Image (cartoon, rainbow, N blue to C red; front, side):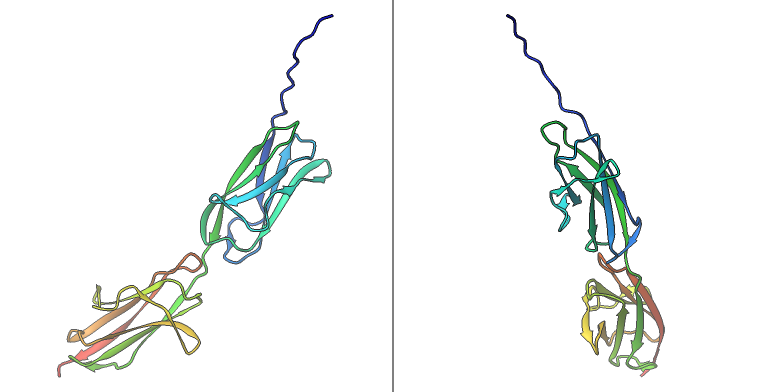
Amino acid sequence: SATLNQTVNKTSTVTVISSSDNPSGYGQSVTFTAVVSPTDGAGTVTFRRAGQIIPGCTREPLQDDAGSYQVTCTTSSLPGGTGKIQATYSGDSDCTGSAGTLSQVVNQTPTTIMLKSSLNPSAFGETVTFTGTVSATDGGGTMTFSARGKPIPGCTNDPLTVTSGSYAAACQTTALAIGTDTIKAAYSGDAAYKGSSNTLKQRVSKP
């Protein structure tokens, strides 16, 4: 008699991932589809964004779709910006694991600012309050007020607060120069909403 050791290597697989909408809007439902080949249908797929597991898309079993084994992941919780989506196939006793990636762009929601002055025209040294109201926003981000291109002291990176059901920031100042000032309110935006700005002309007279 005679014996030998026979090595049977696992079959190498390839995972290809696609997106139902790319780019997508913030809060929009997006479905990622991972197709694994060749495979016998065993094993699972986990989806991640920027290394973090996408909720509800962990260790999903493969499904046979007309002879093609695939897994889908539907989510509406993607943050704004561009992120790497990865689908990782676990492999099984016969097939190696593999991973596919794509860059998913999630557009931020546009915003606008309504800028108002409490007193216009005003006199030199008089207290004036500027209010910038942002729509639409979730309240994240900050606002900076400037006059003649320079930040107004005490009015930089102010957080938004709820005022009459809307998100706004206010700047109170007595430091406006005599003449016509261009007042600018700039909203920083956040992961979900784009930044924006608006201006008004403030007249400041001699006392």
